[in-house]
Image (cartoon, rainbow, N blue to C red):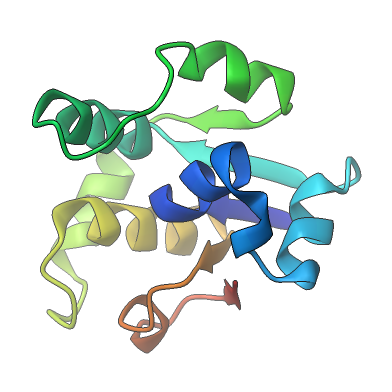
Length: 125
């Protein structure tokens, strides 16, 4: 399975994994699955930390490496895909995750019900 973690899911798996369902936790921890983190997520986390809305350790990059999560860069193909998305969701970070999941044929692991309105495979947490 190829999974893309929503930013909230990434934060939870690193800080409060008990917030995730057993199915999501098993899928994320399964070394046979490819787990991706969009570069949009560290960007969003940095913004929230700078605004004082989020408290996380500064070693996110090493935590991602420890978990064997693969960083998914943002490409022009991803940005063009955002343009064609219906406007169900206004959050630009979430729209990028949706576009990346579509383009890369990834299953988006999310708790956001609005994201499930898009034509993309999702795994609820």
